[in-house]
Amino acid sequence: MNLLAAIGFFFLGVLLGTFLPRFPFLMLSRTRGFNTKFPPHPEPIPLSPHLTQRVLHMRMFYWMSLVVVILPLGLGLASVRWGNAAFGFGLLTSSSWLVFNRLQYFVGGMAPPWTRDMAIQLQILANEAEVSGGCCNWASPYWGVTGVYCVNCKAKLSNMPRPDLGRKRRERRPLGFLYLLFTDGYSILSFFDNIPSSEEE
Ligand SMILES: [Zn+2]
Image (cartoon, rainbow, N blue to C red; front, side, top):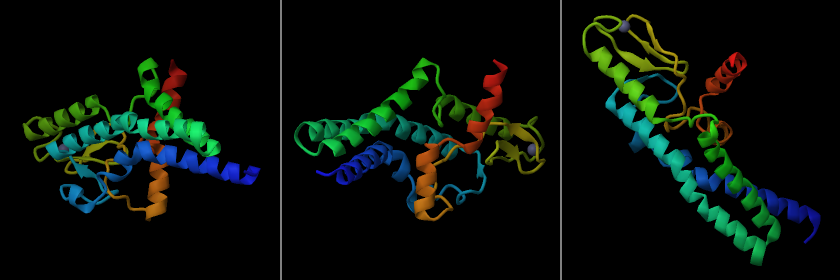
């Protein structure tokens, strides 16, 4: 096998090992039937039990990748042992990177894009809007890109930036897909927010 072919197979392995474990979050919720309860991307989403549940589903898809990653890891090991070593090495590189990436949270790294706390906070804000004494009499909180705000009185209720919520993205397919691969579901804003907070420490 010449060098060029080896490099090609390596990157094919990297690509497959990057895509396969992220399959649940990239694909499972993007079909039309899954999103009838939500306005189309990138419009703000009204707070509701549907939204809270969607956050919990995305969180499940996120952690599911640690199970799905067994597939490229196994395939990578088998390829290195018995098949195309460059391909297998590519698979192993990207899938073990994913495992480290997911596990860094447990040693004090960045929280996942979707957390249980996030779902709870959304539900608390939704409940507060239901009872009187919220921001205004006709409170209707929506989750926009930069945070939760009331469309009636324009009050900002939370600064929580909105991660990807599994809706079909506005960008054309390859672009939306690449965007998701690069951000891994995080809101772009959450990357910037981390800079000042780490400087304060
Ligand atoms: Zn209001």
